Amino acid sequence: MNIAVMFFELGKGFITTVEIFVLTLIFSLPLGLIISFGRMSKNSILRTITKFYISVMRGTPLMLQLIVVYFGPFYVFGLQLGRSYRFIAVILAFVLNYAAYFAEIYRSGIESMPKGQYEAAKVLGYTKGQTFFKIILPQVIKRVMPSITNETITLVKDTSLAFVLSIVEMFTTAKQIAASETTIIPLMVAGLYYYIFNLAVALGMEQIERKLNYYR
Image 1 (cartoon, rainbow, N blue to C red):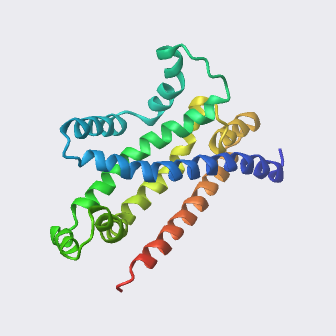
Image 2: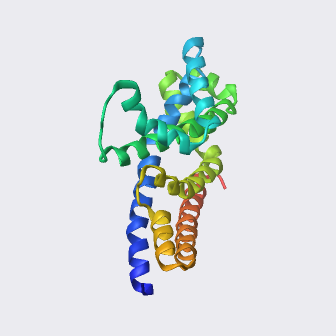
């Protein structure tokens, strides 16, 4: 296999990697915020449930979660969802996993906000919703951006775990080419793809952080 063909094949796998990355972020970031509300809820039942959920997601391997999400419907409900469900199962598992991590990041940011800001907003006539979304949340996002950036970079590398459900993303493609051609060059090229992707993500997040530093 010549170099051009190898780059083309890896490029096709890279598209799948990007799809998993983007869809996971789109759904896990807002879901993480919702879960963080449950984690901080005054309702002890809701708080316990979300705390247990976060504990399970963070305490078990993502690879195992992928298997459970894919095979669970069959063993629990007897549903046979077919091959088309594989990609959906990957996204579901990734979203549920990363939402748990993002929930704790949001929680740490929200709980770090001074109570005086809530009191000042109340004096000014803001409702609880207005206080959170107009005053607290923008500051929380600014504070937690470094942690979110770290998780986002980890997500890029974790996309390779999609191979568990036979989703052919970039690293799986690289392994297949390396095995057929008996060379590690495809793996090195895949590593380069990952590095460039992570570099682009890091630079993008850095730009967002700079824009959020509007008081500097």
